[in-house]
Each structure stands twice: as structure tokens, then as C-alpha cells.
Image (cartoon, rainbow, N blue to C red):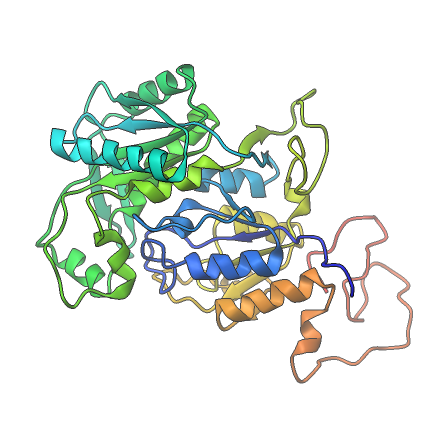
Length: 388
């Protein structure tokens, strides 16, 4: 029996707040992430994919990396160092009412007692953060923060107190009667919180250089018997916090590159503590076919890493054709997982389709450009943009 092939580190990107049919709700991208983790042996994805409010799925093959850090990783500016566990500090918005704040603390206590997570200290910001929500002209959600300084001060204090990751809970505006929320609960809208959540986590990770993720504080909504199953995870309790605490508890260290003498050496790939996972190890990136304009996807495409474009309708129309990219098209995440597995096994994905395409020629290349199937290596040593 042959041994299993080594992992093929794969990025899974599902943009936040753009209404993706799969992954546009809290945790409904988890089945796709689990399948791609099994196919690749190593999946790097962001909290928007993994967070399911009170629901979560812990898998050591999945690296939980905040979106800003994921972009920096794909660009080769950060490396990831897997960890066995970490202490998660809890940052609570001063704008949360006392009873709702206590619900967040109880959720953290439950994760300590039932899951064994190292949580603490708990800190309340010195000023309400003042979250504002908006929708852009495209219908995508975004948001703003009135007091980013209060957020960053609280984060700095938690780091000084010993936290190596930070879970943030900010008070979000309640609007239970809005048409946008009703559409979302019935499976036809956009996650109106996601854009503001991204602002909060991006600010903290960029400023502190440690894993951070966000959970909104909201009052529970009235029962809706016609609730879409994709929205159900968000209505199971009084808090969205458990999935964030679980994800951050084993989120990898973020190691800046280009700095002389960093303690991890030049290792590539998953292995014992102290081994880095760098962008050079990425074997594929999976993203919605209409949302290929993100920094992580473009950075991978620029280096000739296979881009698997999945049919996953959303508000965006940033396609391979619009960008001039060559991609591997997949009709579903199940097909994308098959393509990842083919790449991991060294099988040309093209031979799995019919017709096979151009026939091979007996000619030999004599220069840097030729019409034969490729990519052949360039004479100047640079990697071609195309892949087999």
C-alpha cells in the first residue's frame, strides 16, 4: 500500500459581506472547509468561513487566519507557525449592556469548563466602540468604528497582561424590523454585520501582530418559523462567541518575514513546533468564480499557483475573464476538492475532462515562447504564469 502524499497547503477564500450563496452565512462554509481540509491535508482559511456562532468544528488540518493576515501570508510577508494552543484574551465593548455582557462572560466560562480552553484576562474598553453599519451601492456590507483608539488601547493592555490572541465582542446596532435583516433570515440577503466585523479584526491584527477575531453582541431575535437553515446557527443562543474562542485557541502564530534572525529558520511545511508554513508552500487557492479580485487570490495567481474558481454566486462579478486569469473551473466545492486532491496526487486536472484538448507534439522547444502544451520552464529561470 502506498503512503499518503504530503499535504498540499490550500487557501480557501470566501469574501465577507457579499452574499455568497455558500459561505455567506455564519458557518455555512464549514462543510466545504472540512472537505477541502481532507482533500488537501492542510487548509488555510479565515474566520468568516469557520465561525458558526454557537457552532464550530475543530480540525488540526485547518489553520484559522484572520483576513488581513491571510492576505499578508499569500503575499509572502507573513509566515504561519502552528501552535498546540494559546491563551485568548476577551475584549468587551463598553457599550454592551450589563446583562448582555454577562452572557458573553458566561459563554467564555463555558468554553473553559467544557472545552478546556485557556481564556483570559477579560477587559472592558475604556469607551464604547461605536459600531456603525452600512450597505454599499453594490449591496455589500461595510461598517465603521467611532473609537478605534479605544479598541487598540484595550488590545495593547490584553497583550501586556499575557494574551496571545484576542476575541473581541462589540455592541452592534439592533434593527429587528429591517427589511434587510428579514431577507437575510429568509435566505435572500447579505450578512449586514460582516463588513464592520472585518474592520475590527483587521485593525487589531495589523496593530498587534497576533490572531484576533470578532463576535457581535446583539439582543436575541423573535422566533421565526420560516428561518432559512443557513441563518439558524446565529439564533441558537445569546452570544456568537464560542466559535471565535475555539478558532483562536489554536490559530497559528503570525511571523513577519524579511527580518534577519527570526527564530524559526527557513522551514517550509507543517511539522514540529518551530516549523514555518510560508507562501512558497501554497499548492492551490479556492475562491468563488465571481470574487477573484481579492489580494490573496491575485498574489497566488501572480506566482502561478493554481486558482480553482468555484461556482458560488454573490454580488460581485470579478471573474477570471475580467481579470485575464487562467483558472480551473469547478461547479461546486465537491468538484473543487477533487481538483485539489488531483493536484496533491500529481495528476493533471486537465486529463480528467473530455475532450482532452490539444494533442502533444513531437517538436522540441527552441526558445522562450512556443505553442506546445506547457508550462515549460523559461530559459531565464522565471516561473510561467500557467500551470499544468
